[in-house]
Amino acid sequence: MSADSPAKQKKFSEKQEFQYQLLCDEEKNVLKSYYAWGKKKLYGREYEGIKRVSYLIDEKGMILKAYEKVKTKSHAQDVLNDIDKLS
Amino acid sequence: MLEIGTKAPDFTLPDINENMVSLKDFRGQKIVLWFFPKANTPG
Image (cartoon, rainbow over all chains, first blue to last red; front, side, top):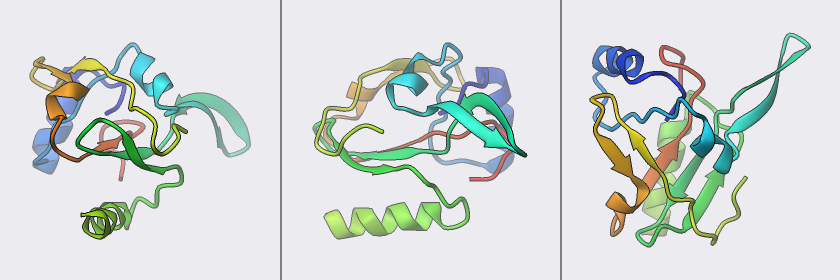
């Protein structure tokens, strides 16, 4: 999920050949409710933006795990390992 | 961050083909909800 428009995400998705759904929250309300929106720092400058957070949600819609500091290189594997451990 | 064991806030949002998708559509399966800053950035 990001705040990009459907058209923009579509290009991204096609280019990457994603096998999963990309959702668009242009209003940013969902981002906020999941604490994925807030102050970030880049080169000492503070600004508001989307944080790289993710959640694992169970079959009943409950939060199983929350990832606040996502390592982009290993994140996919980290989450898959957690799913294996939990199931 | 949302606390472990609490209910994930429901939502309904468009996907890339403008189909509406809700969290409750995924009841009965585990899902990973992944937020990223912008298209064409890593991770």
